[in-house]
Amino acid sequence: MNLPRHLTRYLLAVVLAFFALFLAGEEKDSQKPFEADRAYIKAHFTKYEFEIPMRDGVKLFTAVYAPKEQSVAYPILLQRTPYSVRPYGVDNYPERPRGQMRYYAEEGFIFVYQDVRGRNGSEGEFVHMRPQRSTKSSPAEVDESTDTYDTIDWLVKNLPNNNGRVGMMGVSYPGFYTAAGMIDAHPALECASPQAPIADWFIGDDFHHNGAFYLAHAFRFLSRFGQALEEPTRQSPIPFDYKTPDGYEFYLNLGTLANINEKHFKDQIVFWKEMMEHGTYDEFWRARNLLPHLKDIQPAVMTVGGWFDAENLYGPLNIYQTIERTSPQAYNILVIGPWAHGGWNGPSGDRLGNVRFNQKTAVFYRNHIELPFLKHFLKDGENPGLPDAYVFETGTNQWRRYDSWPPSKVATKTFYFHSNGRMSLEPPTERGNRAFDEYTSDPAKPVPFIPNIAIGMTREHMLDDQRFAASRPDVVVYATDPLKEDITIAGPITPSLYVSTTGTDSDWVVKLIDVYPGDYPNPDPNPARVQMGGYQQLVRGEAMRGKFRNSFEKPEPFRPGRVTQVEYVMPDAYHTFRRGHRIMVQIQSSWFPLIDRNPQKFVDIYKAKPEDFQKATQRVYRSAEAPSQVRVRVLE
Image 1: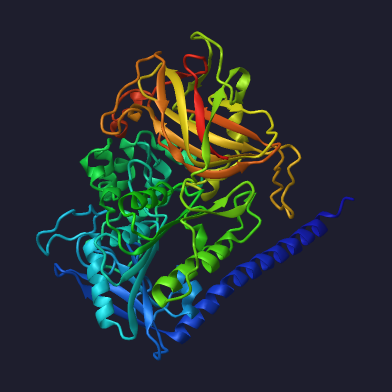
Image 2 (image 1 turned 60 degrees about the vertical axis):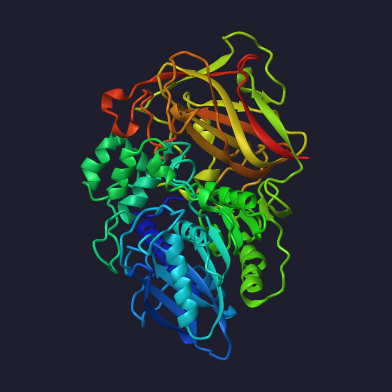
C-alpha cells in the first residue's frame, strides 16, 4: 500500500522519536548500576590522598578509599597504574567505580590506587616497561619492584585499621606492575593477581608478535598515552583526530612508517621514536623482558588472561609457566576465560562479537574464582580449592579444571596440507617441486584483518568470521572434511610452513579456524541478521615476520625462489571443534592495518622508502619433501 508522502514522513518521525527514546532509556538504564555503586561507595568509604615517599625521595600520588566502619581491620587491595587514578581531590569520587572496588565494595577492603613514577600526580621520570634491576647497590637504584615495596611498607604502617595484609591486582599495564611487584616482594604482600600482564613487548605482547609490528594498536595507544608529561598533572591526554572511521584507509594513506612521526607525532611521542630505532630484539627490548626476573616468588599468584586477548595473551601464559619453573614452592594458578582484553571485569562475559558462550563467564569468575582467592589469602577465608589451571573450553562452552597447563594428557596431532585445499592427518605423498599453492602478495592492496571498518584493533577480531578473507586470491585455504567426532585442542599451536617468495622478506600469517556447519542456528533475537551457517570463526591467528624465522636478534633475508622452512609457535588455545564442523587453516602475507605492511624486501621496515615496497609471488609447498603443516595438542 502506498501512503501519502506527508503521512509517510509523519510515521517515520514517530518511529525515529520512539527509537531515540528507547536508546536514551537503554543508556540511562546502563548507568544505573554505576550510579548505585557510586552512591554506595560515597556512603561507606572515605577518600584520602597521599604522596608516598620512595627510597630515592620521589613521591608517588596515591588515592585511598577506606571503609568508614572502623570496628574491624581490613586488608589492602593495591593497584599501581600509568593511566591515572582520576578523579583527583578528596571530595571527588569516580563516576564509574573501577574493577574490584565496584564489585567488592561490600566485602570489606581498603582500596588503594597509585599513579606510577612519572605519571599524572606522581613525581619522577616515567619509563615504559621500566627495566628491572637484578642488583641494587644504592637507594637511587629503583625499579617497579622497589616502588611497590616502599608503597606497601608505608601503607601498612600508616593506614588505620589495616590488618597487615596486602593484595595487588591490575589489568594490562597495571598487570605488568603487579607482576613486577611480586619480585623481592614486601612480606605483607600476601597475594598478587597479574591480569593480562605485559611480559615482553617484542616477542608476543601488544606492539609486536614474533617481530611483526602491531601498527593499529601501537599508533592508537601511543598517540594518546605516549604524550610526555613535563611535570605532575591531573589533565587528560588529548585524543588523536583520525578524521575518518576507516582505519584501513587511514593507515594505507599514511604510506611508510617513517611518515608517521613527520606527519603526526612530530617528535612528541618519545617511545614511538625509540621503537622506530630498535627494529630487532636488541638490548632495548631484552631489558624490558620481565620473565627472567620472576624468581623465588613468595606471594600467592593468580595470573588471569583471555583466549581472545590480542594485546596480552603471551604475558599471562608465560608468566604462569615461568613461575611454575622458577618458583616451584609458590602457590601459582592460571585462569583463562573466553574474553577479550579485560573482559572478566565486564558485566556478563556471555558473548564476544557474534560468538556466544551461553553463560555469564565474567560473573562466574568473580564469584567463584577471584573473590574466594582474595578472601582466602587476605581474610583467612575458606580455602576455595582452586586448581592449578581453571580454563574455559570454547566450542563446548564450559569451565574445566586441570592440575597443570597445558594439560598433561594430550597427544600431538599434525594436520597436513594437500591439493585442492584439502587438509588431513595423512602426510602428503606427492613428490617433486610442483606440489604447491601460489598467490601474489601486493603491499598496495593488503589483506584486511576484519570484514568491516574500524579505526583501531577491534576486540572481536580474534574470533571474527573469516569468510571475507577466504574468497581473496591472496589467501590460501585448507580445510578438513566435516569431523566425525569432537576434537579438542589444548595448548600451543605450531605452524611449520615450507614456503618460497620472489622477494627477500615476507610475513606469514596463519589462522586456525572453526567452520560451522550450514545448519548452525542464528542468534535469537538477531537484530544484526547474522548468518551463522558456514561461519568461519577464528580460533587463533598469529604472524611471523619472515626475516626473524631463525633469530629475533639477527634477521636473515630469504633467497628468492628457494624453499625455506618457517616454523613458529602461536599462543595456546583451548577449543573443541564439534562433530560436523570443519577445521580450516588460512595463510596470507598481510593482515592490515593490524600489522604494518612488509615491503617484501629485506630492509629496516621502520625506515623503508616507498620504492622498497614490491609485489611478491608466494608459494606454500605440500609435498613429501616439503610437508607444510600445523601441529596441535589434542586431549586424549
